[in-house]
Length: 411
Image 1: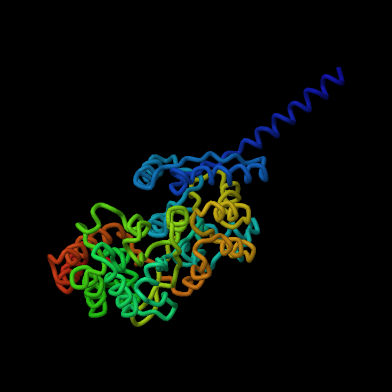
Image 2: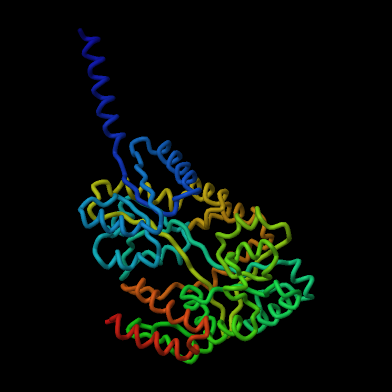
C-alpha cells in the first residue's frame, strides 16, 4: 500500500510538473514565411530544449496579410502573447496602447540588453518607454559588378564616392553596349526618404509637426533621381527592363550597380558567375543609408508575460539564435557579440563584408508617423508621376506636399 501511495504521489508530481511544462507562448510573425520557416523552427527547438517549462506555438502569416490578421485577433480580444512588428508599424501599435511596456519586466528578470545594437534597441521605444526588442535589422549598400567596372576602365566605388562619382561611373558602364546600364535604384518612397537626407533634406521638420516634402534640397534630389532615367538613361526604363527585376538584370550582367539591401547576398552568391563586391552608399552633402528593422513585442493582455519575454529575448539577444540567422543569410541579428560579427564577416561573397558595419554609421530611419502607410502611398503616386515625366520634380513634390497637408494631421 505504501509503495502504491508513493507511485501515486510521484505520478501526481509528474502531472503537476507536466502541466507547468505546458505553459504556452503564442507567437505570431511574418518574417519566417516561406523558405525561412525552417530557421525559426530551429530556433524554437533550441529554446524549448533550454526552457522545458515553456512551449512556443508559432503562427506565421505572409507579410501581405499579416497586419490585417493581427488587427483582427487584437480587436477580437484574442491577441498572441508575443508578435513581430516592423519598425514602420511599431509606432502606431505602441501609441494605441496594445503593447506591454517592458522596462519593469526587463529590470525584474535581469535581461541584459548590452549586447544589442543600440540603434536597433532604441527603434522599439516610444516616449522613453521600451515596448519591444529588436529581432533583426538590415541596411542598404551599393552592389557592383567588378568585371563591368574593369571593362569600362572605372575605379571601384569607395567610401568617398559622391553622387557625381556614381553618375560618371554609370555613364561609362552604359557605353559598353546598348543593353547594358550603369545603375538601378528605384524612384519610390523608400529610396527618396533616404536620398533627400544624403542631400541635406528631410520629409518632416525636426519636431515632426509639418511636412517639408517640397524643399529645394528635396526637389534637387528628385531631379537627380529621374535624370538618371529620362536624361542620361544610365538607369533602364520599364520597356528596357522587359519585365525583369534589378537583381536578375544584375545577374545576367546588364547592370553595373544596384542599390539594394543586404538581404540580396544569398541570392547573388549562388546566381552570379562573376566577381562582385559592395560599397557604402554615396551622398551629395552627406551620407545616409536605410535602417530596416523588425522587432518583438508582448501583448498587454498576455497572461504569460515572463515566458513571452524569455522567448523574445532569446530570439533577440542569444548567440544561438544569432548564429542560426547568420548561417542562413537571414538578415542581420541585432546582437553585436564579437564572435557573431566575425562569423558574419567570414561568410563571403561579398569580400568586403565589413562595409555592412561601416554603413551602420550612416543609418537613417523612415519618417514614421501614425498614418505612415497613407503618407507612403501619397508620396509614391507623385514620385511615379515624376519618374515617367508626367510631372516635373518640382510639380510632383508641390502636389505631394499639398495632398499630405490636406490628408494627414501631424498635430
